[in-house]
Length: 297
Image (cartoon, rainbow, N blue to C red; front, side, top):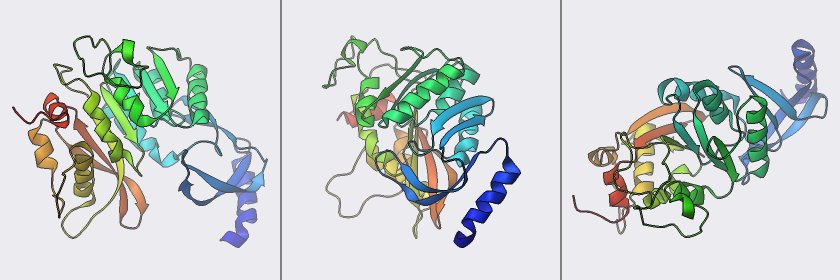
């Protein structure tokens, strides 16, 4: 259909006016540090700034500058209905333009602490929040631009030290509050950031403990489903096995012995035989102690 792209674009523009002013075709795959993609203009204005309305929430961003996936609307709704509770603290290490967070703040009164490496995404997230009547201030809707691993580490640090480059192991003066949920929605590499949780305090933290939601690509193999492969990837990110010749499999039971209560869900197809899986687990005290080198019960 490529040779008919312009014609298809003109027909779509004619049928979808006046709400649609530009029709584009995605070129290639998502790539680069900000997970963006190239596109070609098929019809309409040479303007890529969009206004998306999702369940009553308005989002504003330049489609060329940020990652956006309309197909994740169902997942965002699932999290709001089944995971997030009113007035909880939601942290997101890869927040993008903030669709999940703005909906959580506006629809459930959740407090937000978030991060993205893309400065444009951070600014669009803040601006969209303001336009939805959300108080964008530290302690209520706090979005920063920086490294995701440092962001995760700082969630577990004392507030007085949260700007320091060297995490502290002192939990006695920890007056920060760990989030009820931490989202890691970077399917290409999310499990690799899980080792940052070892900086979280392993004392009596929260009951129930923080819930971590890790989105990752996974392919099944001769022994395991995609979900089982994804769980093993998360286990390796949390507690890597050193010195093995053949990696262990089916490590979900081991994580559950540590109080993790592991669950896995299929989110969407990414390619033939390749799925996006969300692995959710609890950052239990026992897990954190094990990550910090304490192997004694």
